[in-house]
Picture 1 (cartoon, rainbow, N blue to C red):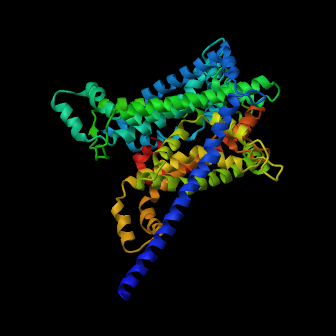
Picture 2: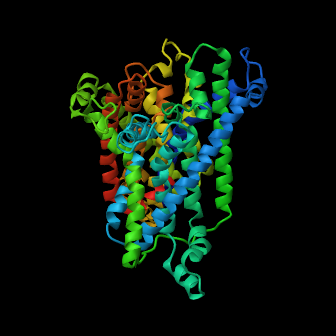
Picture 3: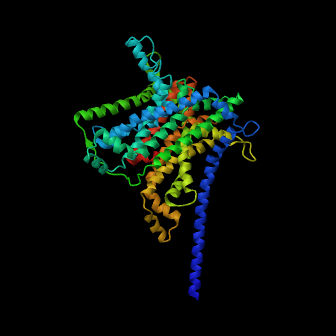
Amino acid sequence: MSFENGEATLSGGATRLWSRRNFGGLAGYAGIWLFLAIFLIYPLIRLFYDAFTDDANAFTLMNFSDFFTDTYYLKATINSLLLGVATVITTSLIGIPFAFLLLRYEFPGRGLFSYLSIIPMIMPPLVGVMGFVFIMGRAGTVNVILMDYLGFAKPVNFMYGIHGVLIVETLHLFPLMTLSIVDAMGKISPSLDEAAESVGSRGLRKFWDITFPLTTPGYVAGALLVFIWTFADFATPLVVGIDDLLASQAYLNIVQFVDRRLFKMGIVISAIMILLAIVFLIVAKRYVAQKDYSSLSYSVIERRTLSTAGNIGVVVFLSSVLIAAFIPYFGIILDSFGKGWALTPFPVKYTMQYFERVSIETPKFILNSLLYSGISVAICIVFGVPIAWVMARTKLPGRDTLDSLTTLILALPGTGIGIAYLRAFRDPFPFTETALIGMWLVIPIVLGIRRLPYTVRGTFASLLIVHKSFEEAAESVGAKKTVTFKDVTLPLIWKGVLVGSLYSFILALQEASATLLLVVPGHEMMPVGIFNFYMGGSVNEAAALGLILIVLGAVCLFAINKITGAKAGGVFG
């Protein structure tokens, strides 16, 4: 009888222990949902509420009627869609061959080309367009040489127009396409190629019939990212004088603060941009769902050698793309050090004074960027790692919805989420006179939300290759889940967490759309400083700040490359 009581006591203690563990886990899960509800779901609901109500808070469709009956806004919509599609096409024409050559063939400098192909991604489009203007603008190096030495009567318009935006976005975003394709193509077994060749399928036919269809998930993920990134960028078009795009109109209408109708139209445009992004995401996911690649996994690929002519052709192609992609770097370097650069091909002398101004006289841009990006990464880790664990290791209710929400964040335009925060957090907190949008804290929060998916996906990808049996073995000998995660799981997945966090940090550093809208005086980050310097005529200071931003991104990218090599593409899809 006493034995039975002891058994009952043990059983009751185990039940209480399980209850405490279960309660702690559910409390953490509830905390994740509370964070997303406050800083993601509520701002979006508030944005749509404002878009569908009038000044008296009555439901109305007139705001959308005004938009769809305005020919200028319809033109801006068509322009934005065409620009997004065109950028997907151009990045595909570069990114797909780039990925295929790097993954399947051995040629001189392949490792160097592999590393250099990612570097254009660390240059924000805002900085890239500045660099292009310095080299290829009306008074840039190329036009000065054409007129002074080759007899051209007037400058060639390389940059000012929608074609200039397309050039900048293409050369900035093709690494996203390359990474996504490399990740997807790396999972294709060489045996499939061998089977295709055995029945006579070779060359381009084999690529289009076998290889490319199997990369569909990666390609669609890359194309969606490229499209949304281009669709949401308003700073780059404004620099080259283009404002008839949706993102540019949303920004201009919101910041004018005078005409109430225009302000409301900025809200409506943001809501439409988010709706379009959601539609694109749903279509992309359904298309990918029609394919079943569950049997694919990373394979060791034996790279093929090329003939001498083939090596020359590949090196010339890759070099040409990278030379074009590195033009803005050249322009930024020259203008950040150059002095007296006017109507001459190159600066007449060089100085460090612009770096002194942005790093010593006004260091706030650099310090704020490092601080806020660091805090945003901490937010990504605190919430992103548990989200990835819930998605990979549990069957909790709402797990699929959590997956959909983190995917949705990738598709949300920065302009839209910035305006959503302006509307959602404009009222003071209870018992205070300060609203969240008036506090510096809003910047790392929005950056954390915007970059959360990269930490989630980096962690999730690592969890998928760590078998559950390791954790089950630890728990079978009495280890708590927190101890198991800390001592067993985390040491096995730290590379994925680190890579996702570094990508989050790089992209937080260069975030312009949301930070330009939510700027708090005295707490500006580097993209805001670059934009303000450039628009204010201090182009050298803008270039110096841009170069510092590039160097910070390059350091992080070097670390990522050392950790992961070519398998980093999974973070993006």
